[in-house]
Image 1 (cartoon, rainbow over the protein chains, first blue to last red):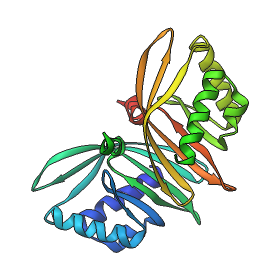
Image 2: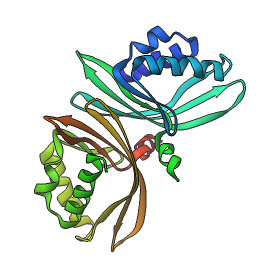
Image 3: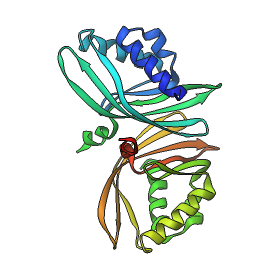
Length: 126
Length: 126
């Protein structure tokens, strides 16, 4: 298993458990999270707040898992292409074609760009 | 226009003109090109050879252009999500949901991961 795959598994578990301290250890300082197409959270404190709001939005029942993944690695940068399954009691199950970027900093892979919406971000301008 | 958008425009023009010297100036030393899902070229010399073979494959009539693009930038890393149109006299026009990663090195954006196939790379294992 690629170390990034393990990190994403840990993050998915942390999101479900609403363990945002553990979750935030896996982001770079200047990371960007696409909260929804057209709305980004920038930096650790905004991302943490966004995850707190997302947990409330999904009535503390959010589940995230990966149904397939490819990692393309070049030096200290890696692109993750994943099928991400998002579900919650109050929502239909949704499959996203997610794109994540990781940077290796001080020997550790950290997420710098977290875009679970993939190419859906292009549709905001459609 | 984001500087990366301009670089991609220059690269598309260089691919069409088969000007591989100009093209290769825009890749990192350890860049990865997805030649097709499951087959990667790694490093500048492999990537250049791959583009030379691609030009022959498309009978020197390859055309590449972008029909839409979003750039998500975090510090010295950027993720590009693009609608890439690939066409050639001997092929039907193809629209790909491309994913490119750029790194800013010495103040210049260079492509480190060139995956015009986007999530199609997941299908190689299907």
